[in-house]
Length: 470
Image (cartoon, rainbow, N blue to C red; front, side, top):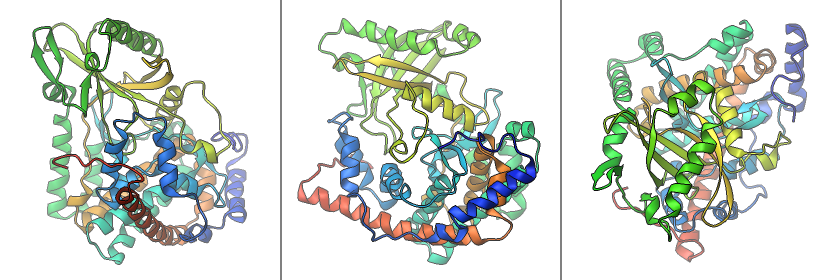
């Protein structure tokens, strides 16, 4: 598959639009609504089990346990299953840098380097160039599944999905008329976004949105530092909470290996930063490292917290080094192969996000088992505001769907050809209606896959661990 923009870069706007409309012959807009939930497909449990082979065996049951909490949690961990479902379908060939896992909880409030609060995509573990509609389909289905989890009617679920897809389509048409640099500089500033949407929000929605924005500004690295650290005889160290947080020294047979591992991770990573950011990083010293369990789909991959201190014990920096494996999309796309999967994640993030973390980089580490693995590194927490779809009423879910759809269009316009995509989508709601049908069909399929995971647990095929308090 061609890289984003490679095909249409030399064409005029009229030619780019014609190219987009021609894609309707490969994949008519109405065809996106057809998804045969009963067709022959890989066993979803086998797909999940293949991922588990490369993960930490003692953490895999936690992943299964989290996926068994609800169909929506299952969906969050089932990006590989959906990739295998989308792969055989006709696609537009209109390539963008895909998020790869564009469900609604991967859209959130984030801090820009200029200390503005922006709304953007947050997770790029599966990022890869591919047909734009794959991201839109994953996002659309997530709203149908979230609506079902809240007990909303099919009409309410469909309303959220249509709003999401319509917002994507209409904003893409706006980008199609913009200058290239204006598209690149566009961002969704949280305060401006709230003001623009205020007229369509109820008083309760305005109150809750303002609270979420204020709460995001309190979710700083200092708050994470207070929660995750403790004072020991050695000084400030990461507070252990096994198996969710396990200090490196507790995982080593030979504690003398600790310093070497710490230095290797940090030194290799620092080389991927720009010179001024390497200079900033040198102001800190590394004092501790721990393994952390994160998310749902990522559970079992290796993820480390790095605690660094600057001037003194009140000047911390918390970094997260997360293992990057091959994207679940790679088996279904003819795309560029990276020599480092962490670099793939970082490159995709920098292309899609308007403002990325200043400490975003990658590294390659040989573990205690002699296996080499790729990692990407970023700050653990910096003004992150996370949506709570389970607390949303129908109007708030629909509003969030609008914001997510528009945000995804902005990400795709940066990496793909907005003129061609907008021309393909057109001015009617044909694509919106098709994806509403798809979202319901896929939500049905997701529920059956969720039930299959439960049956596999009951039969003893897999072992799931339910965490206390979850």
